[in-house]
Amino acid sequence: MKFAVIRTGGKQYKVSEGEIVKIEKLLGDHKEGDKVVFEDVLLVDDGKSTEIGTPKLSNKVEATIEKIDREDTVTVIKYKAKSNYFKKRGHRQPFFKVKIAKIS
Image (cartoon, rainbow, N blue to C red):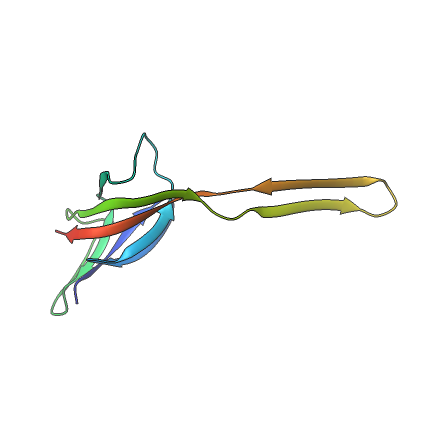
């Protein structure tokens, strides 16, 4: 089973062909169905040999954007007793669901 480790959005993901991965939102103007290429490939393993980048390899991982959405609301509450201080905020983090097409 061939897999790769890529870096995007400040995080590292272990991906293989055909897999769907939820990643941080990418910069730029993207739509569902667009193709994206991840060039920060840190490791590639095909079952027989392993290539490790120093810091990255020349390989690329191609993917298709399946879904663009936002996470469920995370509620942040700040409260101090006896001082009439209460703040409530919500946040929805955007994300992309991408399907890995090819590791080259």
